[in-house]
Image (cartoon, rainbow, N blue to C red; front, top):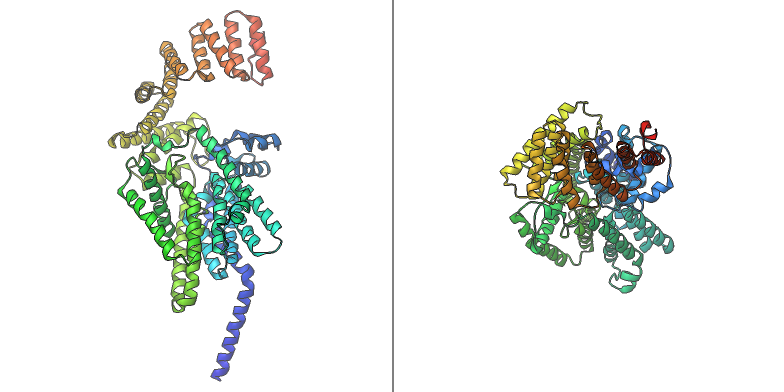
Amino acid sequence: MEEATNSNKYALNGYLFSVFRKGSLWLFPLLIILITFVAFIPSLSLYFVHWDDPGYLTENRALEVFSSKWSWQAIGHIFTSDVGANYDPLPIFTFAIEKYFFASDPNTAPFIFHFDNLLLHIGCTLCVFVLFTKMGLKKSSSFICAVLFGIHPMRVESVAWVTERKDVLYGFFYLLAMVTYVNYLQRDNKKKWYLLTVLFAILSFFSKIQAVCLPLSMVAIDYYFNRKWYLPKILILEKLPWWLFSLIFGFINLYFLTKFKVIDAHQTVASYNFLDRFAIGAYAYMTYVLKFIYPYKMLVYYDYPTTLPDAAYFCLAAVPVLIFFLAWKQRQNRAIIFGLAFFTFNVMFMLQILSAGMAFLADRFTYVAYTGLFFIVGWGLEQVRTSAYKMKPLVYVCIGLYCLLLSYKTYYQCKVWENTITLWNHYRDVEPDNYFGYFQLATFYEGVVLNKKQDPYIPQNDTLYIRNSLRNFDIAEYIDSINGRTVPAVTANIFLDHGVACGLAGLNDYAVYYFTRLIAIFPDRKEGYSNRSATYDNEKKYDLAIADLDSCVKIDTADDIDYYKRATIYGKTKQFSNALADINSAIKLKNAYPLYYITRSKLYRAMNNVDSARIDARYAKELGGKVPTHLFE
């Protein structure tokens, strides 16, 4: 009887295993989609943040036309220009599609943009599952690794931040290129898979500059599959298209970064010598490794320390030794070498040894790079399965608990990105002694009043906004002062925006005070003079206003706005000949701006030159300007 019972039990277990095995073709992907979606559900109810979202989407002038019609001319502009010194046109193109079909006013429909970010992230997660399976990991191990990739809290910045459509889009096509490249190595019809890899690579390159690492990742895959990757036929000829794409897109992005002086922008915050640069790179590398294990202290912005910590120099010595030790110790283990190489290749250009931007770390930089470390985890699970079988249940229980911990952190980290206020309040909570969170929150409140744009998640109250702005500026300035005002550029920025906020509050004396302090720090920085001039203009201190605009023109002779501003003040003081000379200079610099012709028409009227006034009025109207009717009389 007992034997019959055991026989039935084994038969049932065998049947269930067979069903599960057959169903794993669809069950694992379905579970990956479900688990990742649940972890990121809060991202679907987020708004936009005033941290690059305006420049990329909500206030991107290249996208304005798509509110009412489709424009191939605008698409051409998207693919031939930059946004914020970055060349990543494909994400902007996807915004154009979403705006045209689903959200003519993105501010009233943020859901579609967040939903598509999550959809692309789920696509990346499925690609990881397929890639690892094709590279020899068992489906169960690939499933666990894909889930870890999908729910890891370091993914939140890339998914919850609409601007980082760049990450999930470049990551999706990057990982697809990896899958098709493995198919090219393993399957027949190699031309088909080769061309598909080229196509996906191009789409990834158009999405984000980080895709330049793609040919290096291919070399890592060659090594893993024991190809003679070092032969010129494989290393150069076979991968020639991808090397060329990397060079072309690398130079395009370098052009824009150099044009807008983003390269080495950290020097405005801290000065580093040659050794310091490598120390900061090694420090970032080790930080990314530690955050892979547990993502502690997650921030939207990690600014350069004015003085490098001792840990940075320790990492400079330890990281190369550690990498060399692992490479030598595991030289026969292709899985570990591949994973380490893939991670290193995909993060090394983001270590800010040659910096681009003001931050030395960013969670989003690890989006594709962590794939290599997840592969090592998958390989480790395979070892447990074969050589430490008795520990397998304990290992899976620990992995399950670890996944719950990561999911919990991801779920609540998404809520940090709910809106601009929650984002910077979180920064202030984590870094209460850092000026940056207070400064960003202050400039946000100031900007809402200055630009007369309302965000739907806060009540309409300009007085409250200005009060909050001034309070946060006061704290930012206090923190900067007790830290010794060691970074002049930071102090100058605080003075500039604090002065603007004081002007909006009607505190003109304080506004002049802060602009004057800015000028004392940077006498060649035009913003101090132009803003102080506007304040003097409001107080009808026209001579002082003109003197500051004189300084602006000396600093930059090619800015039409300065000439226009000075012309209007000359007009108020009836210095018509000076006003006419300045507005002529403005028109010479920008000859298709109707406001300038309207202004000159008014000056001609004041000078009793009626014919010239009418000519300018008619031309301004042809340019689309709203011309007062009396100028035609």
